[in-house]
Image (cartoon, rainbow, N blue to C red; front, side):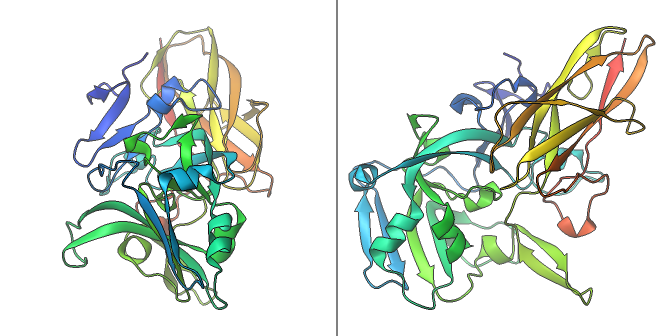
Length: 361
């Protein structure tokens, strides 16, 4: 197995971006399957990983409901489960590509992964609690907690929490207890995490402890201060919005940035593309910095909320020198990836076409 980024130590094959809190990146060049192995799936933490015993864990359902209640681990696992494939991507994935450099974890290409998640539909829990008329959102709160380092910030310790609209909560949000057929590990949210398909992974709260139904928009720290971007209104007035749906993107796994490839040789360029709840319908590859484009072959697995693998046969140039490769995706909504990055996206949603410069020798 490759060791990943040569400038970073590794943990079980993952690139260590931070030790405290723990943030580990998949070496994206190791991509070789539709389902990311659990041991290679990236890890994103904002606070220390909480130690939770299954026997002690409780999930409280409260707020704007007629019958608040709580579940223990055994009771949740006894409920009817569903398995779905979903790609989780950190909203700051690819931040290392930005120039000039910006604050935040300097992810390369691998703060993303695709897994099969098994758990209880959130809708079943909400139905049991009997949501009151007028409810509009569902807040998901984790057991991870700590203090925010930089202002503006609340005083003292807070828990990580995000909300989703009630319609999304009922549609497909999952209370997952298994990942790729295995019980969740502590770093991936044991005993239970939310999976919000098609949304950036910030919404897929790990170490879930409370579900709060509310009749007012939630404005918590990670909803209204962090994990936000500017959206232009019809009057061109910038409005701060929470990150929600994943945007369209294709990434090249091989060759890697800086890789030396032999001249005048067949080379399999490959990677993955995803588009939230849309499906990938086309991936195109340029080996000349965007001057010309050619279609890639798409993998057989095609579904909403999950990535699609692709590959392209490249005959490397006969002459030595740098070569810039690019990939761009098109989805079932007719959207195509852009060359330009919106300045309103801040340090998140890095979805423009990324150049991969290699050396032909």
